[in-house]
Length: 392
Image (tube, rainbow, N blue to C red):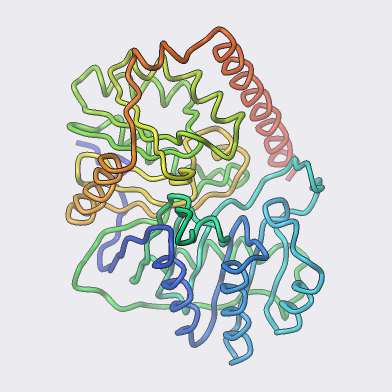
């Protein structure tokens, strides 16, 4: 029997800790940076110039000033409002810093492959991989709940593969020799927890669709349960078919979405799919306390995925994404318990009756229009990146 993709090439020997948005996440990232001895890579879509963003930037500056070779790669569209004073301070500290893909980016528009991954890697043996950007809204306050999202703190041999990935993203053509990342790691400690993981990358430009394929494989082979938390949920035709088939063979499927999203067009387009989802006996819950920014899943209490990848074609064809695929029953059971508790305490279920009450002709039209607009944009994105691949 052929091994499903979502179980293939997973490496053991890891220690993995689940992190949730809020102070514990940012404290863990700061600790990883502060304990680094040799080098740090931080790649993210967005850092805000607020208390939380400055906290992480200050920790990178401290690392650079004590002699740690520090690389900071920010997406040119996601992080486009940093002040000149802060940028000068970053570069003046000795941090190797640049924006990813500034071509065709203005303050209100972008049309090129985006760096959407969120990764911190220290010394080639410790990494944080997740979906959180570095901003106050992911930290929260005493009166305002943090945006819900997750990450994992990973120690072990797969960090060597992650180092190869982040170096490839950093070492662009024509980068000055002194700025190139040349770090190598031959081995890392083998941890007794022996959690099996695999670094998964989506980069359409490089013909890597590992996260998408892992989702498809895991859903195709699911036997008992699928639990998905999705911030910008707009599955393609193939993914909808796989979910429908899984439901028809008796798999219990639950999808948790945002009650109110920071991306209204995506929100309306997702609501356009509610009819399909509910008709196929898939349960929908909406997260209430704050924006849901998570992009995670557990399947059959065995496999989990955590990272920056959204189930939509923007992540497939317009973004660079990195997830940790985790094939480990104790971790998956613990993660599922955390997610089920959130559903119990902080979510409401959307029933057919409620959906029909709020599904007016205007909302149906707005959903259809938003869905078609996003499809059009992703097709344009697909063609542009395909042309770049052919010309390259």
